[in-house]
Length: 415
Ligand SMILES: Cc1ncc(COP(=O)(O)O)c(C=O)c1O
Image (cartoon, rainbow, N blue to C red; front, top):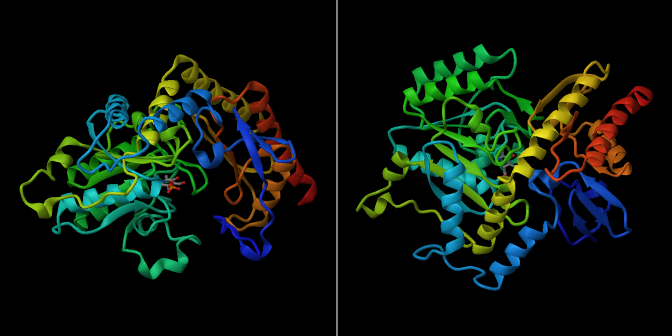
């Protein structure tokens, strides 16, 4: 009887997990000694490669000095330094940072900040169809109704869903938002900026999204950019919001925040939102805090990861990966099995002509095919995508692209 209850595992048909002993750069090494290229940065978290010596050293040094201290009423250098460094890089207006544990909690914090700041006069949240914001109850509520949320649907709060501004749906998305803003009095609009990851790497029109955010601000609706996946260079800029002409009032981060080493979440906001909590009235307190909030080791990892990210070498790698994806996309764009091809920065997604859906057998077949070729790619239904660590070598990236192409060709013979 298995003792570990693994995420996203169908109990009865579960295959034994691959046992990973160690990892270095973009490579994972199995117990049997096989090397596997981590083409999805281990669920989109790893930025600079596994076991990066600089981040490992920063963690070791911090652990031997101060491993943790309660963050209510206390502070420490790693949190102070990280906050200053983050704020310096964030889009204009983001002046305050609240730490939590992961992407879902970063979203919970953002929602609670917005709702409490707006007060009871405003009710309702706007979110995109097919969104994914995490697995906790608030995050599930603002996510699109799906297989993931179905067993809990009656426990989730109501959210007004609007279409995302995907190619061809820009006007519809804008009109729908406009209609709801005129009719209701919403407190917040939450969205994954420019690309919806779990929905299948669905790319948005930056101009329309900016106009939608602008419209929200006109109606005093707080905009929340969930940059849990898009943050820290994935979309080609440091944050996806850098590509928007309108800036969000709240932003959520996790995944790449610590370079993929330790779980940590952060929610930033503008000064006017922060100041709405400044009061002598104890009822105005933001009653939210996790035991490990502001963990010094996590902060030390995040600081070192940010230093690496901002280096010329890493910025060059991000540009180079985007260019390699573009060249590959250009070469295979006419493949008969492709329904769509999407890319943004270091993210490349091939949508395969097939029955869509997370549970399609295609997903499992593609996953196994790629893994057998030494590449970890975990398709989202019929969408085969890669989001590699920035340290990926030319040979490794070529192997990912070749494996994706080979997977497409296999469909030709087996379907
Ligand atoms: C956009 C977005 N928000 C939130 C989350 C939840 O993050 P976590 O898994 O760390 O709770 C994810 C996870 O994939 C995500 O992609």
